[in-house]
Image (cartoon, rainbow, N blue to C red):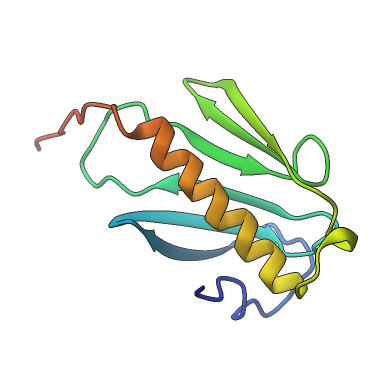
Length: 122
């Protein structure tokens, strides 16, 4: 698995998140990583759809509970995914965050598979 958080310079929470792109199953995702602390991860994940104005589900983690991922569409939480705490995990802190982001992207792909694109023409 690609190391998503290996390039993080400052693991402390910051006002300016680290941004990275991630590809899974041919779909690109934008990941804003605010904190890669495995006890209190905080990130936001969106699918990348240039010039598309459709309402896609997006995800955020770390806003209600340490490892609670919320899936949001049209401003409302449509689903949640609770993760185990880092102490129960066998891998490194980077692997833990990678797994969370990877699973979040998988869930977003399933939520957004039937969304019809609405192309914006300038």
